[in-house]
Structure formats: C-alpha cells, structure tokens
Amino acid sequence: MTRLERRIVELIAALGPIPVSEYMALCLFDPRDGYYTTREPFGAQGDFITAPEISQMFGELIAVWLYEAWRTLGKPMPVTVAEIGPGRGTLMKDMLRTLARLDQAFISQANFAMVETSPRLADIQKKTLAQAPATPHWHETIDTLPRAPLLIVGNELFDAIPTRQFVRTEKGWRERMVGLDDDDRLRFFAGAASLDPSLLPADAEDAPQGAIAELSPARSALMTGIAERIAGDGGAGLFIDYGYLRPGVGDTLQALRRHRHEDVLASPGEADFTSHVDFAALAEAARAQGLDAHTATQGSFLLDLGLLERAGQLGARGPEALREKLSGEVERLAGPQAMGELFKVLAVMSAGVSVAPFYRTD
Image (cartoon, helix red, strand yellow):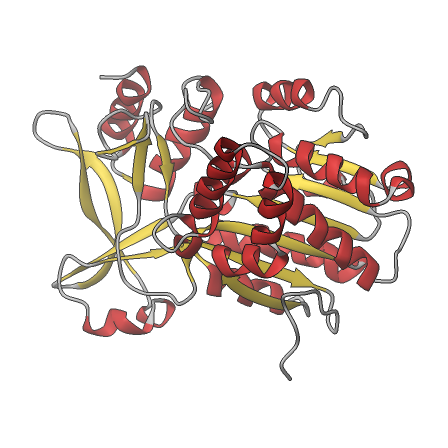
C-alpha cells in the first residue's frame, strides 16, 4: 500500500466514499504524495513521452502557427505568448528558438509566460530555458498574465484535469465513487446521487447497465477562463491532447506507470492518471465566449503545417541514419497508428480570424 493510498483509505473510512474526480485529484496533485508533486513523469526514464520530447519539429510547427496567428491579428504589440502546463519546458524552448529565427523583433518585444502550478516543475523549466533567446515569466494561473493580446498553447493539459464518472444502474445514472471493500481495499461503487440524463452524450440513452459516462466541468471551466481572456484582449489558443471529437459513453480513465497501463486503484500517487478529452465540450465552452473554435486530428494538423517538408529540410544534407530518425518521428507524431489519430487539436481565436489550416466555413 502506498503512503497516499493509506491516507485515502483513512479518509474514506472517516467520511465515506469519494467521487472519482476527487480520487484523481488526490492521486495527481496531493501536496505531499501526489504524482506531479513527487515524480519526474516525462521522458524515457519517466512514465510517458510527450510530442515535444519526440521531435523538435512539433514545437517548431506550433511556433509557426502562433506567429501566423499574430500576423493575422494585425501584429499587435505588446503580445503575450504563454504555455500552460509546460512540462519540462521543451515545447517553449523549441518555440523560442523558432520564433527568434522567424522574427528577432518579435522575440525582443513580446512577453513570454509559463503557467505552472508546480514549483518543482517550474525549477526544471527554468533550467531548460536558461539559454533560450528570451526569458519567460512564471505564473501559477492565467489570471496574472499581462492584459494584452494572448497567444496560448497547451499540450497534454486537459487530460490530467479530473473528470467525473457516472455509471448506469438499474435505478438510473449514478456518480461513480471510490470506496472500501470488506478488506479495506479501494474499489468502485455507484453513489446515491443521480444525474440529469440530458447532460450525458446522446448514446447514453441506450447504454447497458454498468456503462460509464464521463463529464468534466473543471476542464470546461478552464477553457471558459482562457476564452474570456482571448475574447476580452484578443488572441488565439492552440490545445493538443488525446481525446475524441464527438462525445460518447465509455470509460477512458487510465493509469500509466513506466510506460505501461495499470489498474487505476493499484498505486495511488505513483502512476499518472488521465482520461480522454471531450473536444466538443471544450469547443462549446470557447464558442460560448464568442470565439471561433476549430478541431482536427494532430496528424492532419501537423501535415498541413508542413511536417513532411520540415523533415525533408532537416534530413537533406544529413546521413541516412538521420533521415531514418526523422521518418520515425514523423510517423510517431502524425501516423494514424501512433499519435496522429488519437491526439486532437483545438484552435480557438477571436471571431472572424482565420489561421491556416483552420478557416471559417460560414
């Protein structure tokens, strides 16, 4: 039993079962024993590898998109370029290098920001960016970002925000809870609180008993906050995560440890917890603030931005081993059997603004 599991068992024994969303939050963010508090999750030695760690081309193309969004907005200055949930800082490092090559004046005049709640990760990011062509400022929330047009990116941000789960029982949909069995081990239960079926995906009506549906008000709330800033000050945002474009019934909660899946109740605090992101809900939250919102698969987005062409440039004068390496990176980022179809992209921007490869259709 992990130290956090022992504390969760004591909590449930004293107060009763807790919602899945609360369990997920404790496992990830508990200030003493949470996963992001105590672990180095990223890279080959961690539990998962993100797109910026796979290839520099990912960050380069993201930077190109943000720069084109700025140009389309009329080149406002001052402007803030922010990353929210920036991991080890690799994405920002690649973006800053690319932006410096694109436009030295932009690098010297723009404000750069990292939105990070973990002091430990912030220290890692500062080391990563120590030699970068610009020095970002660190913020714990978007609320303290400068009031200026905002260009913001979040990669694998929303999947770690806790989600609520509901299970269909013979008495209707009930919130899924984490409680204790007769041996004081963690197990799932159906709670007493019911749910308005109109809040669930359309296919929930025909779902069998035992089916799981997921809702994440916390994710929509974060997107609403970001969208309010863009609606008020101008700008654009780009968010990449694994998830689905159309909501549906299904249990997507998963725990990842040492690059392998494990039981989500097995080792609280020692495994990464995620669930698939409902991109339709995020887009709806952005549109509710008057923004335009567009979605795509990661593969189509990167290919449309010139992933193959960039790989060709990098490998043109290099040895065959480099070209093979770049080909492998392209396949991992954009291949339909890798990240290309599983990962989705959401672009949000001021109404009426069009940035390739997203264009208004009305």
